[in-house]
Length: 166
Image (cartoon, rainbow, N blue to C red; front, side, top):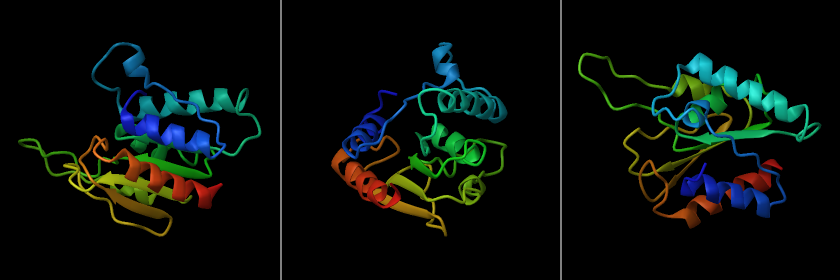
C-alpha cells in the first residue's frame, strides 16, 4: 500500500474527488512473503469489497484496482464486485520463465474484464506489455515493473483516464 505508484494513483483519485480505500493483501497482513493461491486471494478481496459496500462505500460506484498481483485480483473479481472500471498498475502479463515450466501468459485475465480498464505499464517491464483491447487502454510510462521512474507520467495517465470514467 506504500508503493510509490499506488500512493500516486490514490493521490490523483483524491484530487479528482474520488474516495479511495487502500486494502492490504491478506498474506501481507499475516506477515507472509508468498501469496495464497488465486482462489483464496480472490475470495478475500471480494469479502473485503462486499464489507465496504455494505458500509462506507454503500451506494457508490466502484473502481477497483491494484498493482502487479493485486491488478490480477482486481481483474478476476471485477464482475463479482460490480466494478464500473478497473485500474491496473504494472500488470504482470508474462511471469519470468522457470526451468521445466512452460511459458505462461495472463492475457485472459485482462480479456475477461468488460468494463473500462486502464493498464499503466513500465516500458521496460520484465513481465511484458499487455496489448490494448476493446475495453482496455494501455499507457506505457518510463521505467520498469516498479513504475517509480516517472510518477508524473503515471499521474497524468491515471488523471486523464479517471476524468473520462467518472
